Length: 183
Image (cartoon, rainbow, N blue to C red; front, side, top):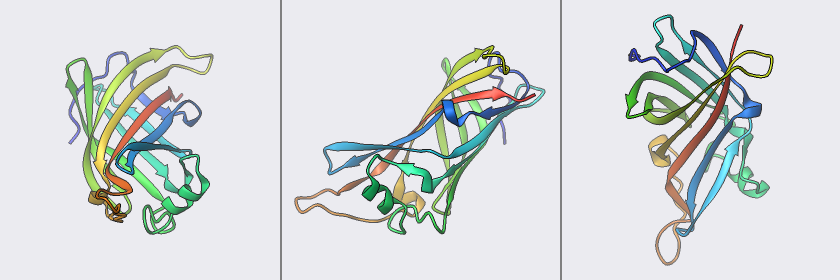
């Protein structure tokens, strides 16, 4: 159920995510003391604003496009130990509602990863709209959420000898999105 809430100054229509000006990133605890950061290089999606101002979001991520700037690690992440990119090539997000939270927003939705769909909440900051550079208006958004990888069936355990694990369970997903209004 989509909540009727309008984002200020976001015009009715379809706003396509511009992958060349957007980032879908993540971070995860490594060896209990640091974080590994990465991103997905292939993704698409759109924000659709209905006549009543209600926004909805649909997005897709090609999980095999993962990069952590380490080819060996990236190869392992694509295997059945983690994403199983061959069997589950796409992660998706479909919004179910948007609500105000102070000056920002929360986008509720269904996130599918590794063949498992779970509800998630994206904390959203709307950065506004710019007239663009001759191709129509663009809007900017920043969003984040934290998921537990085990909730999505990514349950590999790599325990450390002294306790803890090589890879943490909590994954922080961060989105920096620029979207253009389609004609």
